[in-house]
Structures are given as C-alpha cells and as structure tokens.
Length: 180
Image (tube, rainbow, N blue to C red; front, side, top):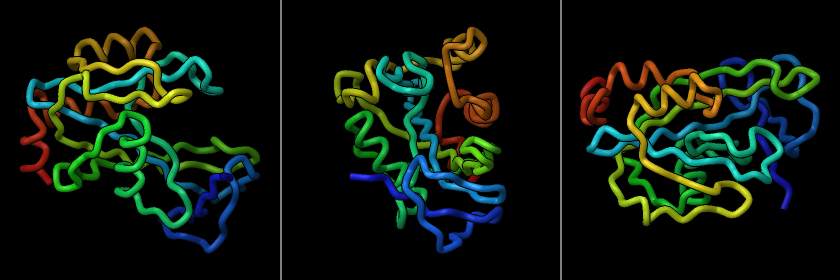
C-alpha cells in the first residue's frame, strides 16, 4: 500500500494537498512526522537501532518515530509508530507533546518536515519489545550519559533536542508532567 501524506503550511495547517511518499514537495510545504522519546522510572530512555536494510541511516541508534499518514494527527502517529516499530502500546495519558522541530529542505526540490517530539512515561522489561523486521534490529534502555556518548560519536540520529529533554527531566518523566 502506498503511503500518503497530508501537506501542511508553515503553521502546521493542512493545505488540502495530499501526496504519495517520495513525490516532490515544494518550498513552503511540510509533512508531519514524530519522534517518540520513552522514559522509564529508572531514568532511562528506550532507544532502538535502525535495521541495516534501511535506506537512510542504517545501523544507527534512534528513538521511535516516523511520518504521519494522511488523516492522522500527531498523537495517533506517535502511538502507531511505537506499536509498529517496538510492539509497545503506550498509554496516551502518559505522554505529552514536548516541542516541534522543523527540518528544512528534506524533500527535494524544497519540501520540509515538521517533527513533533513526544515524551512518554513507560516501564517494561526489554524482553517485551517486539522488533519490526526491516525497521529495527535492536532495542535497549540507556541512561542519558550513554546516549550523549552515542550522539557525540555519530552513532545516534534525530537527537537535536535531547539535551533539553534531559535538562527538564534528569530522573523521571513525573517532572515533565508537572511542567506541562
């Protein structure tokens, strides 16, 4: 099945244009994607390794995420992507939208991406993770120091806001919810 995307304007509003993934996007056009940071009570973050079959950033560490399908909102996308990539059903009441990051000119000849960054509180043993073949090949809980080292070494993608996440929540996402 072909993946369809809603095209958004600079304000994040749907323009009425829908494209198939991979079709040209133009200046001033955006599509919605999500990055899902999952935090446990131990102060660890759930990360996954991209499959070696991925076209972009194979074998790199990341957080769960992906593009919104046409008609989907951000939260629905975050929950779907987490279920697909890691086999986890997150509780929507234990998450919140942290920020939106705009990635300019990711889709030639000029289209861009609005990435909603979500934070969820979730505790589970790593054995509960169900990896999606072709998407993920490994997952683990890591502390902030280990993730910072991965970012510094170039082994982690899509982590531009990690320092901000850790600054507001050094030990628990409970602190995040109090600030919301």
